[in-house]
Image: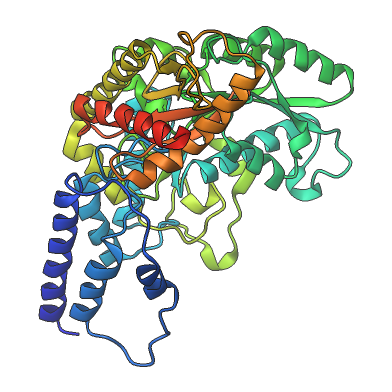
Amino acid sequence: MTSDDFRAAAHTAADLAADHLAGLAAGPVWQPMDDAARRTLLDAPLPAAGRPLDELLASVGRDVLPYPMGNGHPRFFGWVNSAPAPAGVLATLAAAAMNPSSAGGDHADVHLERAVVRWIAELVGFPHPPGGGLLTSGTSMATIVCLAAARNRAARDAGWDVREDGLAGMPPLVGYVTGETHSCVRKAAELLGLGSKHLRVVATGPDGRLDPTELRAAIARDRAAGLLPFLVVASAGTVGTGAVDAFDPLADLCAEERLWLHVDGAYGAFGVLDPEIAHRYAGLARADSLALDPHKWLGVPVDCGCALVRDPAELRAAFSLVPSYLRDEAAGELGWFSEYGTEQTRPFRALKVWATIAHRGRDGLAADIARTTALARRLGELVTADPDLELLAEVQTSIVAFRLRPADPTGSTEPTGPAGPADEADEAALDALNRELPAAVQRRGRAFLTGARLDGREILRACLLNPATTEEDLAVLLAEVKAAGREHTG
């Protein structure tokens, strides 16, 4: 391939990407793939001979780009998936062209990663000593990294070398979570040999926050049983409702009990940039570790998570292993990134983070986040004002938890009065209705939201991350929920 061949193909690829992004808002948010389109991808034969780049790009434009997940659309309110930041999209091409391993060494990606990890810490107000973090594939991996450091410290405090001896023979280590803690924490506990049965689910208050009184009681019970409490996981924005825990009382308790305070900020930590809700994050900087995702609220193209720790030595104690073939006498005090986590060969994630943050700047990012939280509060108001809808939790960040609650969820033609306290049959019918609604709304193509369970009830949840979303889009979402509900009840 000549450089001219590549240049021409790159121009074509750029046009495809630009046309795709420009046309998103005018099309359906999501649509099921028809069987023929699906089979084109599933049954593609392994080519014996290579295909020209222009032919490959034509296939991308015809067979791939018309069938997106939907998260680039301003009426995508599902899960916690953002539209891609344009600067990050462009930087991804340059990073792939370099294609380094960001494990360590003296090349641009290593130094840029150290800078952007510091930027991320500065954005959320978390302390950042040199070496106090690294980029990961996402918060799931960042959580494994942080909890491994917590486990290592707890074992060391107990006179145990977990890296050398494993966990066998130790009293069980116990962690504390809530019913809304992200599933990646349980996965990390299972992978690290802690066992999910040693994650205690602590009650929350009416505001959805972890209750320090209940936590203290649970810790006391476990100590009395001869177990080793070592970890509390707080949230800077739960996935179900966006609730933010009260960090200061949790930090006080963890300091008193010598427990590691980890904060799951995957979705919500960047909410601290919005002055309207920044007070909710008081005490976040006192955590021992924070996991968060630039590929969520900041819009950095997937994948990119980040693990931040107060004490870099704890990461290195948990992971550092330098075989002779990777010795680098010029690495300096910080060594290689591969000494701070599980990955050896690491992709060049830093460039797209750098480009995304540098393009918008702190002020631009803060404005984008403040817009989405304001829209979420407005959506909460619209839900509250609608007699067929019910707001199920305070809007704390940019997630709105609600449900469709028509006067008669069974679809009966018998007259009913205004919606009042539901009896058991009504609640079952409401649950059945709201369980079906997300998929029904998605299939209609004009909006996209997802569901969950909260306090034993089926809910609808709308997550707002796209600053291009408008109040008109909110009205479309609620109209689609009600239209899908009418279709369901006949």
